[in-house]
Image 1: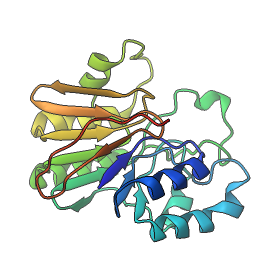
Image 2: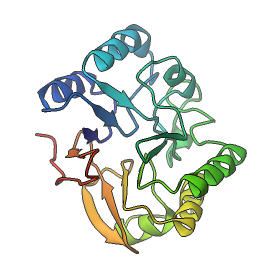
Image 3: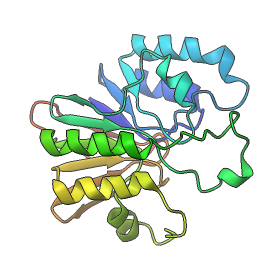
Length: 215
């Protein structure tokens, strides 16, 4: 199995990538580009079919239309737990002021407080071995990204921080920050994937390989 970083609408590159991997199962970790702009109406159905045919699925990022994602069979719904791996999408767009609602920005790009509280309870009970999200916990953003700005307040980061304080999974995979990073923080291996970067994951042993940047 492979995890894949943000796609940002580069779907031809993405399809070529998943077909080239020695894997029959991939998960793209948000900012797929679903429903972004006007061109999506012609590609969403074909993209969904191509993903399914190649074993590809995805979680939602902040640059994905939530409603369009829900209509796709390859979308992994928030709070899904499979084989001790938990999936949650969504994040905050720091440039929302420059975007058009319903076109390239969505008011529900982040899950609501109620939804996040509910997922927090599920997380605490399940104590997943691996977390796969688009965003990361607050302290991780501070530790890994010097350009991080606290004035962009994200309820998703705060919720993930709360989860991390309740239970520290072995590995936490995320995207969103446009950098390849692999670092252990407070006992958890945090893996951030840049655009179209990949990392292999063995579902039987729970071992991860090394990040492979897109070329």
